[in-house]
Length: 261
Image (tube, rainbow, N blue to C red; front, side, top):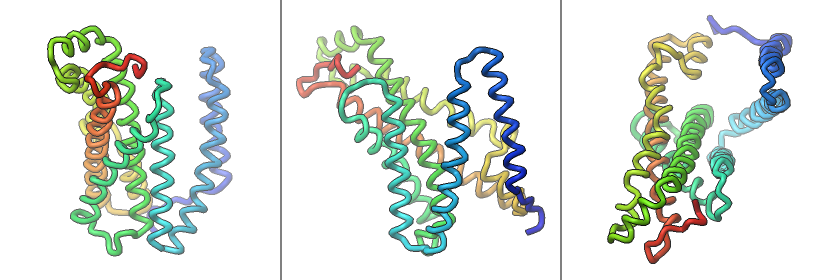
């Protein structure tokens, strides 16, 4: 395809010099992250190589159950990652994050598949898997931020929340300000991306299509859809996460569970 530049293994090896730059900064500034950088670089190579072969296998078979299985694995990994970022040792973290992420992804993807891209068949793997992966990743980050921020907000305003409960407020009413703060904070990265896309940043999908030779105007249309998808998934995931966590933080007697903070 005209405009496509092939990257060989020699080029990949040369690109490792960029990791050396990161290591130099880490060592000179004594950041204590050199080991993490090395592990991250190795994991990036191994994970992307593995997923490359897995995607080829799934694309070649083009069976709906393999596509669904792969998406399910992606959701499980995202849910575990979001739950792991929550430092609270309380139970139910995985179920909470998994439910929130899945809700955001399903609502977004059903809309896009049914009314925007209109995939035929709906499980077309080389389209469905990449765009769903983008939504899963961004929704995961929004859910993790929501959970962490909401716990922190309620923890810092514990006396305020308990006073409101004592005066007859419901749990939803007692922590309404904290819920809003948590969702707002979680959506800031998404909103910032919407504000500067195309001016400060050329997103990966758009850049990849242009490099592959797709007309820039066509690539832009795809990227607009992706940006709206990402925003939708993040918003729904954050909303569901904060509602589920609110229910978890209060007992049936409408008392705040301090051990869950």
